[in-house]
Length: 185
Image 1 (cartoon, rainbow, N blue to C red):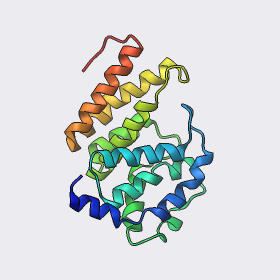
Image 2: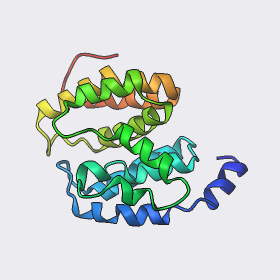
Image 3: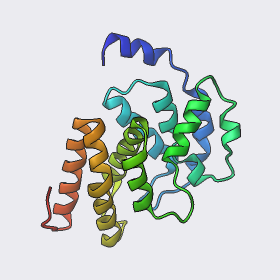
């Protein structure tokens, strides 16, 4: 991270968004842990790739809020700070509506999503792939996740960040090896 990026990060106010995400600690993930920790992992991945953008980071910390706690309203999020309108707009882009197939949602982001939505989705999927545990999840779920990642998220990464695409490819191939799958990129 450059000095400018470090200075920009030091002056960024994330605390109100973190406070909004705290209830996610009560939302368990089917792979273990909770949604709050997952959102922080997504934020950490963005920082690891030197994304020091207040809207991206604020969105990352709450990216699962509406899906996991549907009583949360966009209106209450709009009251948080000067970035709120842009955070809410990006959050809407990366939030799937109930009963919409995941593949359709990801395909829409791939073909119609903003660069920022693709970056968030890539960081989110990297976190998900890291957390996939064969002991906890059925092989069919892992296979579906790997397929969706290869078909939709990997091409997003190719569009927005070459290094993310490498990490996603490596994670897919490592999970395939764990499942003894022969298909590779």
